Image 1: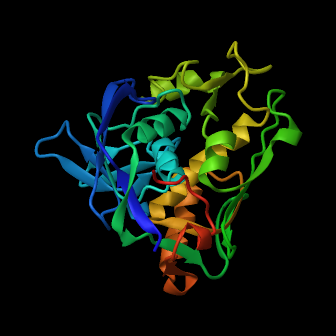
Image 2: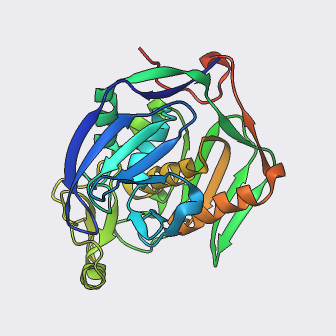
Amino acid sequence: MLKQRTLRRVVKASGIGLHSGQKVMINFVPHTVNSGIVFRRIDIEPHIDLPADAMLIQEAFMCSNLIKDQVKVGTIEHVMSAIAALGIDNLIIEVSASEVPIMDGSAGPFIYLLMQGGLVEQDAAKKFIKILKPVEAYIDDKKAIFTPHQGFQLNFTIDFNHPAIAKEHQSATIDFSTETFVYEVSDARTFGFMKDLDFLKANNLALGASLENAIGVDDTGVVNEEGLRYSDEFVRHKILDAVGDLYLLGHQIIAKFDAYKSGHALNNQLLRNVYADPSNYEIVTFNDMGSCPIPYVEVS
């Protein structure tokens, strides 16, 4: 059978919270079978565990935030996307503050850290959520849709009327696998408009933002001296966010995901709509990697 995965050993790192501006310690700790992804606030005694569960997302403005009993862990989407890409099923993520560190604004550093921990198989079948019929979510003109598909394909379109974001670079498609995520998506950074920065900081957001962890865009173009990592980095980052948000369903999804101007709130609403009708999906397992429609990195 295709087995569940966790880390072989603990990995520790630190960074700055994008919105809080605080220094944050983060530790990746192996977890037991069928336990899922769990965020643990180690700055609180006793420690508080927050499962990576779509139903615990109570704030989704600018980032995805888990909240349980008034305790929060925010900006989880980038690390969740890295965990999804490596096919990790069970993991404890210890953090010393209310926010995951932003690192360089992408999922690349998290991929690197997790690979330093090594992957190990566990003695239980890896579970997938297979979408059986169309499920839709809408907010105004924004939309997010799942349809049945043999694999996990993401099609995303953004809509910015800005000289820095060319129209031909506002749509992208990936067929999800470890390889495609690592090479085509993982290094895409979060982005923001310089004109919005004062407003965000006045509302205690983006206090840790800098050109070292985000793409800055002014009225004419990209502010960062090094420019973009991909010609369509903006939409690729939206795909990166979606991969992390959608992994909050608890298992990897087998479906096609079509999104137009979607964000964290709409991604979460789509997951809630999946849950709302048990006939929307089924839990499936596979005998081996060859029969699995999503190719993952091999466990050595």
